[in-house]
Every structure is written in structure tokens, then in C-alpha cells.
Image 1 (tube, rainbow, N blue to C red):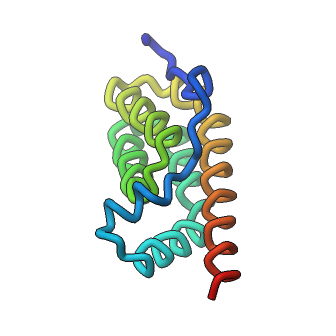
Image 2: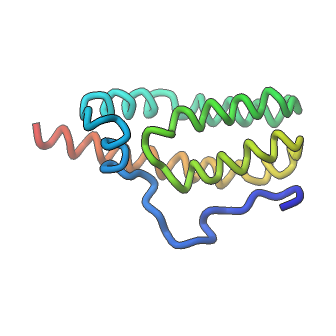
Length: 130
């Protein structure tokens, strides 16, 4: 995979968010999942911006840290497509393949947007049942 990041879009479609798996990971604590969801929705643009700024700065070590932080922010959602992409991006950063990450940014933005829409639907569904 020299100087490229494989796109998870090349595989079978996987939902951007797995609520059942997320709840299992969080020990069934629904309120915690809702809090994490709201936190992500408030900060998602900042997550994207931090990665884009890291690419612009050219500091591969800092960029790997930023991407690792994004992975931590989305881990609880069991967001497989986005987790796969960020794992690949982090590995590329660790190899100092900034061009590969630059090329992955549009896919990254798309995946973040898909996760955000799925989480917004999750919050809306929860609001309608209370």
C-alpha cells in the first residue's frame, strides 16, 4: 500500500454506526452512549480540522497523534468503516506518507459525515421515544 490508503468503500456496505455493539461495549449504559454521541456531534468538525491541519503542517508525528485521537473519539460507536480508514491513515502517518493521507481526506470527510448522520438519527429516535 505504498503511498495510498485503501478505501473501505471498496468492500461490502457496512453501517457507519452499530448501536447494539456500542451499547455492549459500554456495558448497556444508554445514557453514556447518548452523551458520547452528543459530544461527537458538537466536535466533529474540529476532529476533521485537526487532521487537515496536521497534513498541512507536514508534521507526521503530530498527525499520527491527531488521527489516533479521532480514532479514540469514534471507537465507542463501533464505526467500522471510519475506524478502518483512520487506522490506515494513522499507519500512513507513522510511515510519513502524508500524500496518502492528503488523498484520503475526502473519504475521511465523507465517513465522518455518514457517522454524524447516523448518530443524529440515533439521537432523534431516542428523543421520539421519551
